[in-house]
Amino acid sequence: MKELDCRGQACPQPVLMTRNLLSEGPVSEGLCVWVDNGVAAENVRRFLENAGVACEVAEEGGTFAVRTQGAGLSPSLAAIPVREVRQGEGRRILVMLANDRIGQGDPELGAGLMKNFVSTLGEMGEGLWRIVCVNEAVRLTVADAQTLDALRGLEARGVGILVCGTCLAHYGLTEKRAVGSSTNMLDIVTSLEVADSVINL
Image (cartoon, rainbow, N blue to C red; front, side, top):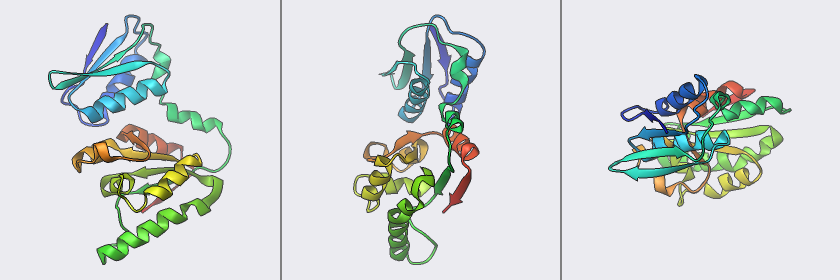
């Protein structure tokens, strides 16, 4: 089994290194990617599984090993799965949230405005494609958030919700995320590229 050591690498380098390795040619003997934190392991696992490769994550001596199940990995896996949305039709609106409140004034007012904003996003209709939460906006996705029900409703309608895994870890919220998918900066940047329009808040 071929091994790729990504320990000590910050997001999104482990995913990029995995993609770059696969782009060099087939990995006939399977692949094991070593990382030093659970967020990186989840990002690599999700990248591989989105590309159709079964894998498993194991913690070994304080590090994490992401091992593919089976052999014959193809260089075609180097394509980021999100790019496939180009094949679809219709407008794709991405909403980028970087805070858990709106504005710099009264925190209580700002939190209430954000709750109302998220609750009203559904009015965009079919154009609303993806919501990305970074920095303090990841707090909107945890179990006790006032915005949780609204986000779950949007996700049930097919709206993708990407939650920065590095940000969750920074705030100690990795295990508390209750909606959306943990993601990395590569997925976020690719989503911004694919979107027809981006709303930053």
